[in-house]
Image (tube, rainbow, N blue to C red; front, side):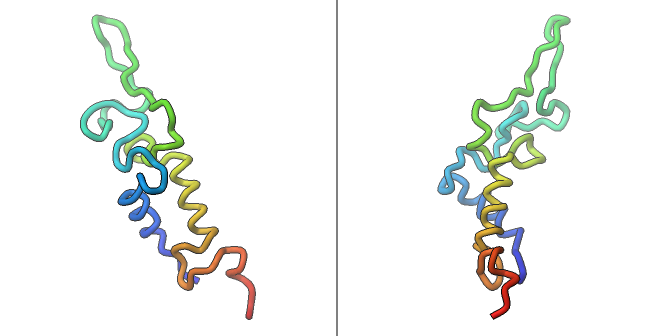
Length: 105
């Protein structure tokens, strides 16, 4: 059995909204720009404003509907979606559930 992991992430990024996710490429936790990502100010990042540290790399309210955690890592919800596809056999060749993959016919 061969599993096509690339296709999981491709499907998720391309069709995330149809799978119940809010955002495909934008980071849940970060700061700045179109994708809420700045390699210098990441999740939990702070900047100084008038001598006082201010948290700017804040997390979104509901990570369970986001795919991208911090611009580098996937959220727990996205990883679970991929896991469910692997277990269900959605993208394996042949497409059989994992619990049946080791059974001989």
